[in-house]
Amino acid sequence: MLNDPHSHGLWEISAPAAPQTSSLTASLTADVIIVGGGFTGCSAALHLAENGVKAVVLEAVEVGYGGAGRNVGLVNAGMWVMPSDLTRTLGTDYGQRLLTALGDGPQYVYGVINKYGIPCEAEPVGTLHCAVGQKGLEELQQREAEWQGLGAPVVLLNASDAAAKLGTSVYTGALWDKRAGTIQPLAYVRGLAKAALAAGARIFTGTPVLAVERSGNGWTARTANGSVTAPWVVMASDAYTRMDGPWPALRQEQVHLPYFNCATRPLSAEQLAGILPERQGCWDTRSVLHSYRLDHAGRMVIGSVGSFAGTGHAVHRAWAKRALAAIYPSLANVEFEAEWYGKIGLTADNLPRFHRLAENVISFSGYNGRGISPGTVFGREIADHILGRKGAEDLPLPLTDPHDAKWQKAQEAFYSLGAQVSHLMPVTF
Ligand SMILES: Cc1cc2nc3c(=O)[nH]c(=O)nc-3n(C[C@H](O)[C@H](O)[C@H](O)COP(=O)(O)OP(=O)(O)OC[C@H]3O[C@@H](n4cnc5c(N)ncnc54)[C@H](O)[C@@H]3O)c2cc1C
Image (cartoon, rainbow, N blue to C red; front, side, top):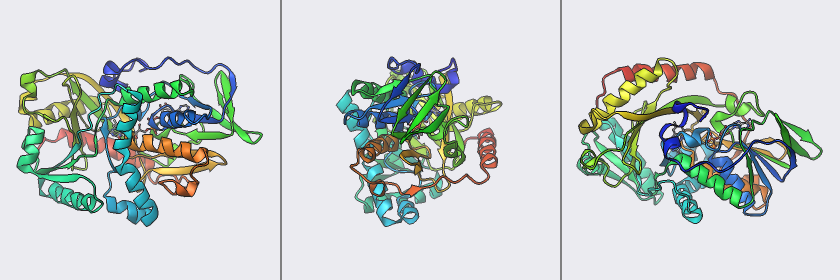
């Protein structure tokens, strides 16, 4: 997008065309203004429009421009933190509610994909969280015990069973979460947008919201060449919240973690032999984690923490080649066809946030690298709240105020630089 091959990489190459949209050049009225055309904004628009609510999405660039069009495509059933951390941080009521909402998230996502016939390479075959060393295995043993205690279909595979599923024996085990899977993320968010348009929502792209101002009992969103006035505003801009737009506090409460992906060209049947035969999406237990998965055409997509800005591109690209060779020696000499990166919005406790930024102005954000299921599910919850079906206290997250992240710039520099240092080291398991 924006003639930048490093913004959306493979997903832009293989996604169906974006829906036909244009920028806003008029003054409109609506019931709900949604700022941001990612999973959260498009899901909210779809669920609102299906219920007869006039929803207008204003997207600064293009549908899926933010994390939605750049991510790995792992449809996860929870957050990074241990399930017990959710109840410890949020209390039993909200913790259990969030665990249920996120645990059921992948099933909901794949249900939406089926319902609207979204062509997005959906593979509901589970994910494999791969253990590095004894420490990694112990972490996964705890995860298995916690999830199984909640009745979730999550199984810890021993090293040899994991090797059979992965096609590599570098890991000491793997946690197979059967609820999860993969998708082509840009294709999915474009499909959500098309479904929302078909249901009656309006989507304007190339339309950054410059300000949201009080207007009678409602709000007016001002853009360069138009405006929308409505009683409700939903901020769905997460890690791509603009400092020159409304409520930059949503950006200020996050620390951005850069994450990149490299995709090979489609691999031959011989190259693919034994590699991820069931096509689960994978990531590992290290703190500078790596992830990998196949797309439908048989490309291997490998990624990790790091930005392609400056020297980052050469360092991380070289690491990706070495890591791929270490995990799958048969892929040692395969060229990359696409390379891209984006920013993940982290919160202080690694949990998402629900804010009321002003009267009838709400936001869901801070997905900490897990936005496909939460964004889709919270979009539905936003609609239920605006429709009056659920009060703020009935949603899966407590209502909080945004607080500026501590040492934001220092933490961001640390992650960016630390990833480069880590990726200059030899790849070992
Ligand atoms: C590299 C990477 C890998 C990831 N991997 C995964 C994964 O495997 N699985 C997973 O579940 N999640 C993953 N994530 C996280 C996930 O992509 C995000 O959590 C998700 O995209 C958040 O969805 P959203 O709709 O809330 O925000 P976004 O998708 O970021 O969309 C926000 C949109 O708001 C727009 N916007 C911002 N400000 C304005 C304004 N003023 N006016 C108009 N529009 C505005 C932006 O242009 C953007 O399009 C990853 C993220 C990245 C970057």
